[in-house]
Image (cartoon, rainbow, N blue to C red):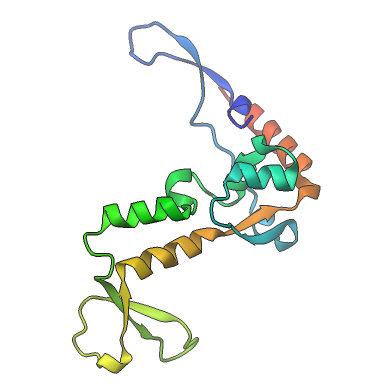
Length: 177
């Protein structure tokens, strides 16, 4: 459904004068700033273990083919690296990436002014810091936190899905080529 909205262009991929009609995969439209920042249009959601964009689209919009809307509004262009992994995928990933998942990834210190709940990543150089001020973040902790961040997404309210898709189709259809 998503790629069906892309326009066609005449393209010579080899440069030999043999032009073909191909889908213009480089065509993009952006969400309007007003739409992207309007919190009334979205619900926040934490992706559960094993949930896919198709599952969420089916549950929310009654159409798994609208999974692209979920990816689009969350600015996810790489589903395999920007979408949370399920437990089995995560364990395989960390075991493949790190020789020691419990090794130090980096150290953090508490911010001393402003929002003191924020932590500052100081890397692995602890020179000048007291051990009492340091929080050790292991490779495993780092990857878990990254996955938790990926789990936090926004879902377009189902009341606006039809209008959203129609506008996307209109904008994608407007081509200068």
